[in-house]
Image 1: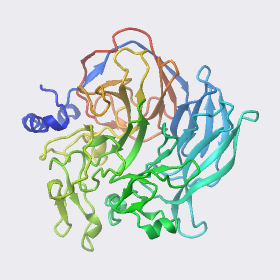
Image 2: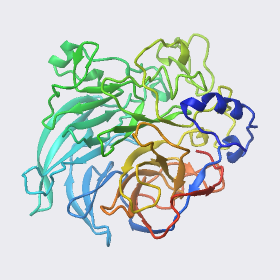
Image 3: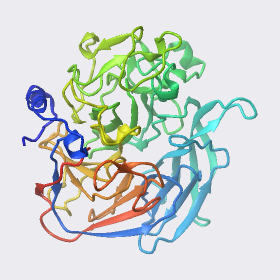
Image 4: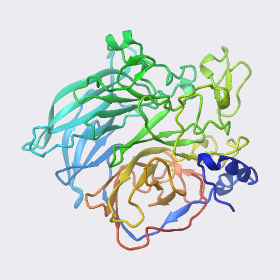
Length: 486
């Protein structure tokens, strides 16, 4: 069986090969993409378990793992040696929902505990802006000060509030760049699908000058923001459609991955609809296409059905677009500023069968996506073959995918390989300072791919920090792995 290489220059080959594949009823046959499993000996250990939906993990300058717990609304510091937990903060007004609401992203100031006075930690969380009435979901970006003596976070300073939020696709990743600016991802809030199918997608709507002057951030849906560390708008942010705001890039669906390379290149990962999860290089002012394009602008396995304009009485469907729902092919969207991804998971032919899977009503587990929740740049030389790679965590398959980058870091060389496969939902990852160890946090619950195919909600390590320490040579190659769906 030929291996599919989903990159722009090979899309025609991909389509031709994939069209020849027979789509069957088993999970492997339903998504016949053989991937390689990376080689190398790793010692595996569960550092701690029982966390309440951990969302972000970072190695701190105190040699502790700093973690946000989405549902508990707290920041903890974990000793990687013995799993001892020290609670640094609990935020009382966090609004928690079933999947995308709560305490989300965290960024540690690069000078934290370096004696410069910049002992700051940046957090973003959802809150109810109208307590006592109907829930009005919003997000708040706050800077906290860390007191080394008490080991507590305090002195909150609100940098942005009233940021749009919803019950789905809030994004919520933070990263501080080498330019000392704070980058913050915001999803399109799940518009145009499921219970929100009558909510329009506004990822293409840009803020007006009047909105910016009034500090009305409602147009920040489906964007990546670039923010001064005091919350203000950087003077060198891109002017998009004649307006300078916090918006750095736009046209995003649910961007949950954000990472910088050593040269300042900003990488981003976002969830696709039924196919075409994306890994992108972010460019100032770039338009990344959603909802008009998923992945490449190739008319493959995606059309934009605008359910928000469906006639009254129409019910949402993942598979059938009724008459009266406006439909637009990717090629019909005429733009000149669309930025294509450097990798998709996965581009499939236009006649791909999404409905006939062994996952039943929870079909998304069997669709050709991995649900990338974050990514990180690996710049150490401790693990052979990893230097200059992106490592991407998957919610759907309990895998960490390695993408080897080109010398200039602007494209992917070769095919993804995967590591650390388990029946879990991987939410985020961090590296030890010497690069020998990878720490992965897992969701506390929800569905993932089962060993035997199909899906399961019985996770092997719910709410855990898993440690994978490199032990031996051979990680620079791969052997043929299984064809379980991704």
